[in-house]
Image (cartoon, rainbow over all chains, first blue to last red; front, side, top):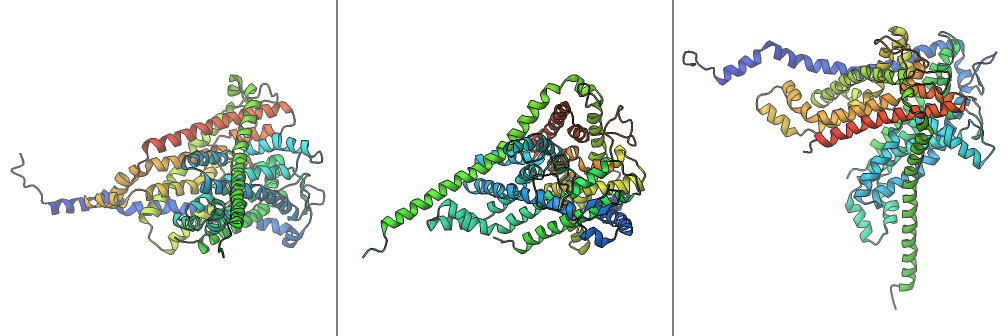
Length: 312
Length: 292
């Protein structure tokens, strides 16, 4: 029944649709709104840096920076408090080195097996199962270190104390293992088949292909995965809090109680150091140190994977 | 004169083949060790905690006595935490991903946003706790509440959700967008009606996995100072509360041996929650994911 009205031409319809106010507004404002949400992540970084600097400055008003960096004793709860960060860094390093010694050989070996030897169906099962390890909360790992790994270690060597660097180190190693395996396996799988077949055609065994051809070709991805894993180990908190103890020491002993940077922050947070005390500000100084360590590691990983990537 | 000495070649060959076999066994050994540690870990926790995992354990509040200790407040608290983290982190994460994939031109600001996100993903969780303590708990004066903890956790898992959503949006083929534009749709219409519906399974899968990380995370909440022994349930976003990992942490630190079993029971509850969330994620991925 639209004989009276003339049906609008297509151009008119498009023009009408263009001029709809709500729609035009939506098209214009949505990108801006979305940009705002994207800026939240930038704001978060600024917030972290601001928080750390803001509170750390107050700490350094009370404790000289040089004492903090070069001090060999960390005794914040003593009558005459000492704030030398080196013992905490030593604790973190012990755990990290042990974790790397556990995770790198095992993780790489597992990655080589999955990428070079395993059948497709085996890989499809094993890889997700390994990734389950990555999804287990760290508090569970910490509990495991305290109630299983430490007693087993004590059975092997009675010298080992209840709190030590060895047990959390091993368990942090297990925690970062799937990360190394998964990322390294990705790097090795992306090496083209033709290169492998070339080596096999020249009479190499699979092992020789893996070590002499695939591993060098995937090296940047592998190294980046290790650096990322190290960064994770440095920032790991709950495992070292539960199983590492709270005795900051500057030595290379791994059988006795230690304290890492993260464990110190937890110790203060669960205690009752009041707001405004030097101890309260010290967790920010320690957090800042931790942040710098992990940031450098992450930047290094990005640099390695960008700079040395082989493109096929 | 023979150019190839067959005997020495064969000897050499045998050695190489043996080495290949030996290393294959070693590599497989590494996989086995990794899998075995997972099995041992799960087995230990289930056998230690099973006896304490009773109905009373689920419905009791925390207690000084191991037999009466329960997980009610922590379990409900963890769900409250999700009530804040899920909407906040998903809104911000998906919004950022849409911006970066659909709108962002190649310029310095957007490059910076991208670089910033990958760096944020590497910041230790405990540092987020320091951020939350200063900004949310003190400056915004939210206290040790569900809201303060939820916002902190949201920022922590934001990079994970962004990256997962970006991948899901990127996987929607260009042809679909072009077809939509060809039909006269505007950019926003295309995003809402074409891109997002196709990307939603991937986005949801990634988001649920990120949320399951938030539910198991302890360190930031320790720093914020979430209490552990609570005899009441949270009644609002500004109420104080506790969560499963905090409760487990507290039990694990206690000297009495019985509390270790209680902690194991708590871990079982936490792991069951994680398994449920992961199963939902895998279900969504397998059921709705489209391959182009």
